[in-house]
Length: 364
Image 1 (cartoon, rainbow, N blue to C red):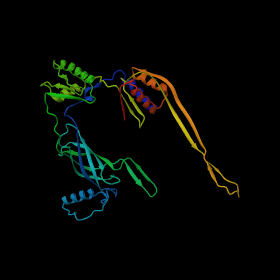
Image 2: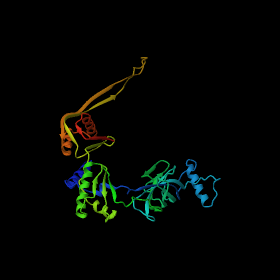
Image 3: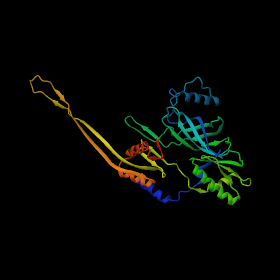
Image 4: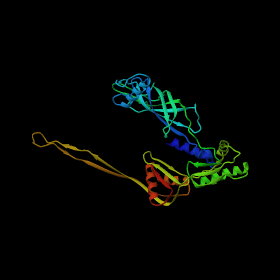
């Protein structure tokens, strides 16, 4: 944990005042997006780690249909081999890829197969959400995990029921992109009015030098409108304005994850002056029953006498004044309390309830 904090402090000192980013890193051209593809296929060649046909009837049906397409009538037979597994094949098709280019695909088991190691994916059609096939995938599955079991011990590492096929898919039908029109829109990945205006100012400063007129106009917090000059193509214009630097603005926000104890505080978070105390009450109950044994020939009974010890210990209780207009002073005030991350989460929630936290509190 200390090494992580030291690395973050070093990174902040290196970034420092120069926090400018490129426009292409925080925006995207409307319509120029990736497409997600999915398909159902079969992996063969497994060493007895495939689906059991009784528990995965869809594997049996798919295998019979494939064999019938190859001229083998197997509909009336019940297959019992365990070297075949039904899988779901997924891939992301980046914008601009054309017919004949290759994609990486991910193969995930659908039935009760225990491992896909050593398997080969048979020809599988990958379709987009509109139902049209856009790529075909086939090849040897690369699995990084393994699972080995004996009579008294089982060793597993990673996930052996999922793998990848590098360059395993070939694009058959490209996805249509946005038309090359004069009117375009840049969409912000993190919507913000101040960031949108800074993007407009940077683009117009460039366009006045290059085209003698502004080409960017405000629309809302999520998008910026561009009027492309007719003498410049869309790729050349996007390459020119994509490298322009701006300082993006971010909303004041505090994100806490109570499961992992992670607290992320934005640099613009402010807290009104409040006094905070945080204490933890620990109650420990110890049961130490004692047995009372009667003497011989006394006709008595053995009696268990209960003995309970209760210890109460309250830690913390220190009062500290927390206030600040910067992230550094806020963290310093919280550190003065000497509490753990779980305590910081509780303090931030209480400060928010008191109306002193001038930021959005997001609890995950």
